[in-house]
Length: 183
Image (cartoon, rainbow, N blue to C red; front, side):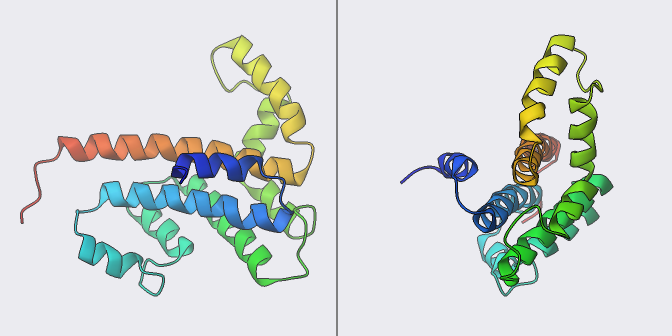
């Protein structure tokens, strides 16, 4: 059985319809958010399972996004982007007439994301990194990755996951500096 990271990679490069990507890619984001919360919380499998059970108080992606925000694990802009991703996922999952990232309101929601404006700024010549060659290569890559709303969504998710991996490491490092919690 492939590892979760291998499964994530397959999902990114799969040529499934927009609906498939709109549901699978946010699920990958949700998995990463759940990892961040798990690292930040006390280790207790029984309570964890009660909270994160699909019918539990933290059973939905939206609830986990809100918790991460309230615990200051994610920034306000990142919080907003994650809520939009959840909204897009729900729109595709619950409305059969939504078939494409190019449809309204999906494309408008993608364009409302902070990550979208960052990607466009970098693509159009704005600096994101002190290494000028890195910026040039990134602009070249983004030229194609922002051609369609589908590609833009996928690229946005990739960068969001990279950021979430960084957050998870930071939270783990912080937790390692704390004294053990009382039993």
